[in-house]
Length: 520
Ligand SMILES: Cc1cc2nc3c(=O)[nH]c(=O)nc-3n(C[C@H](O)[C@H](O)[C@H](O)COP(=O)(O)OP(=O)(O)OC[C@H]3O[C@@H](n4cnc5c(N)ncnc54)[C@H](O)[C@@H]3O)c2cc1C
Image: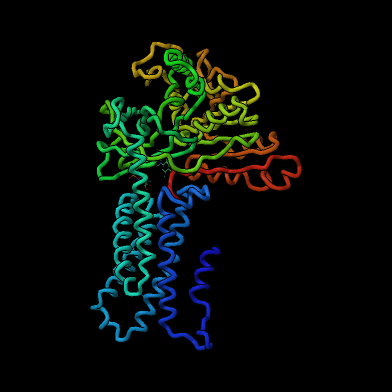
């Protein structure tokens, strides 16, 4: 807001020359134009994924994208003021239409106007690919035409830095792509980035592949996936949240051991982790099937076999929950990609003495009871790894029709293997009746006391109120799911549940983190 006021005041404040004479229209016209041009480099930087502003401020690129859009709209208004003044000033205007500088100016402003229209949220959300390519074409047209237009006023120094900033971002992304995917580029023999796509249900695909050696991420971060055999358009990259955890639980010890011991240690670790190994050792994604790229990925999963994947990332913020005494993690469907690694991270940090978290509540809503199998082994291992000082509560809500949890063949075996395991601990059938889980298997997730599975939507207001009442110190609530879930959590935490008064009465100070899987 301050930025908008500042720019408009600067553009329109009453100004005279040094003798106190009123300035003519050309002055206002040029001031609006120059002021607008001076913002181009910053707008460009704020729209890139690797930018200096993010590096210096620590604010993630997706948050800066709001500012990028807002600044572009402010500049559009300034440019129309500039253009309008030209029309009034340059009379008769028609004779100037032959001038290349004016033609370039008109083309530039038309391109920016189209750009601002296609960037409106309904268009961006409804037709992302159209937005993406239109944005690229219009930005290029706008900057090239602006360059030739501003040559007349010799202020091209505001334009060419935009190409440099954009080019640097691209170079960085290409370098990252080469570093993380170098086996493709022939620098080293070894495993390629072949991913396994598994169809979990009609609407969900799990994609997993070996972690590239230099690729590290923190919970909640996103990677852009480029899959030439699945994409329809060149450079098509889609963001997905990494559902696995970049753990050093076992690697820290491995580093100190001789090679033979290291591999023994690794296989021991993988044995201990069982079929949940990929969530600690690989890069895993849960992908909701939509209509475009994800639908084609589903077809690839149905066909079976491997798909080639290039990873670009990681990007985006990662909530630092190490400082909180209580953490509540709420997810709907594939939102578990955000909350599962966060849960594993909290447990590992408490084990390492890096966090004093005392309680973590993991709430997951799923449409079908069988979705529990996506992560049940991982949750069991997580609960086994949790130190006694940390109370972990798992609450799973099945929102679809009351159902039966069917035995699933293992989707992958220990570590490397993809063969079904002969472990029959999951061969029991567990009925859900009257909203309660009926336990039959001794070593299933449902046998664990701190795990509750219920039918129906979670009563988030009641659950959050209860947690706030019991908590002290700092409490974080992280939510990743539909807009409705996020709204419900926001409403639940309103006054008086979370308020300064509550803190004065000894209650917790509550921080809310919302991840919406999309650009707002
Ligand atoms: C930061 C972030 C993290 C995400 N994490 C996950 C995740 O872990 N699991 C998951 O299932 N989905 C996730 N998504 C959403 C996922 O990127 C889109 O659903 C996917 O790109 C849709 O591809 P499609 O071609 O099948 O979509 P379409 O059926 O063509 O469109 C469906 C929706 O996806 C949006 N979309 C399409 N392409 C893109 C793109 N390249 N970038 C952003 N949005 C796009 C469209 O605007 C539309 O609203 C995430 C999105 C973002 C921005």
